[in-house]
Image 1 (cartoon, rainbow, N blue to C red):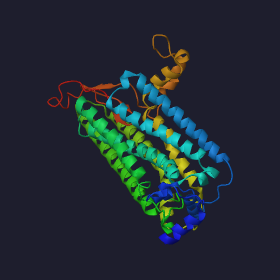
Image 2: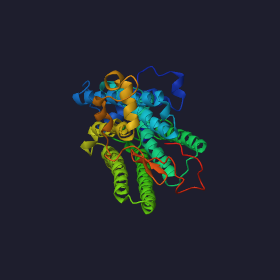
Image 3: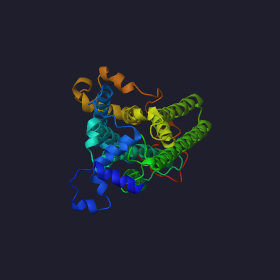
Image 4: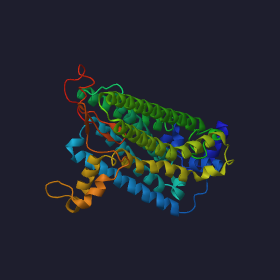
Length: 396
């Protein structure tokens, strides 16, 4: 099969092939005929038209993703109040979503007829950029879940250790994302083995696609487990507080607010990514040309990209402090007074929230808690842990 594959490439390649690069093991990476061969084999050799209406719609969504996440990043950067570990993790998620929108926009602009003019090396860069940024977005969600689990379940709040932990999580998320993204260009592809090729991504091996689905599924399962543990830990803590002071109704509202927010977070993630996961699983089991739905993969990927549009809303805009910072950034003159107070017209923008129970901290026997974006922020927990902490905890 390898000889026949090489023979086909040689017949399709231009006549002038005396470059020193051709003696390299990756010589085929510079041969655009490989793209034509693989797209023809998988049945995707149908790129004749320019940008379709749906592609233009996806471009508009990507532009909105870039602008939205850029605003959130700017708000975090300009407000020293947000220069704390938890907001750095949110900023990392926002950055990965911004890059996901940008790389997918580039992917669309280089698709269509331009695909057949790409060399395999440029094709791997085009697809790998989208893959790396989307993977970073998913793993950033896991990093946030890990941080909240450590903070709320293990009660580890020391600022120095938290900062090191935060940088470690951010670094690990990008290292793992880049590692997964460069595997195809490093050799885990189907060049030379057409029967092993993916239909959705004609130069990717179906085994690599299955491997990535397994990794993403494990990440999703880990996020679910961590948030379930966080919820039960918070409910347990509120029960202890209930024994100290009567506040069952308020405690119940707080627990339900946390559960509601976490459910929305996981629900949106699953709704956006599950169609793409199912499509890629179908791609693994279907032979080339058997499943027509695989030729509509851009719609499924577009739904997954839409998650990058919703992440800033779920994780940052549900915070009153973040909403106030963004209002001050975007429309300071029309919604804010000179002394930094919110005008009446700006109050509805601040009060809108996924959780109706979000309000200023409630003092309960020495414990201040705030439910925001599914995260309860302890400020002083001396009532429950007098020997562990002797100073106030820095708010997340």
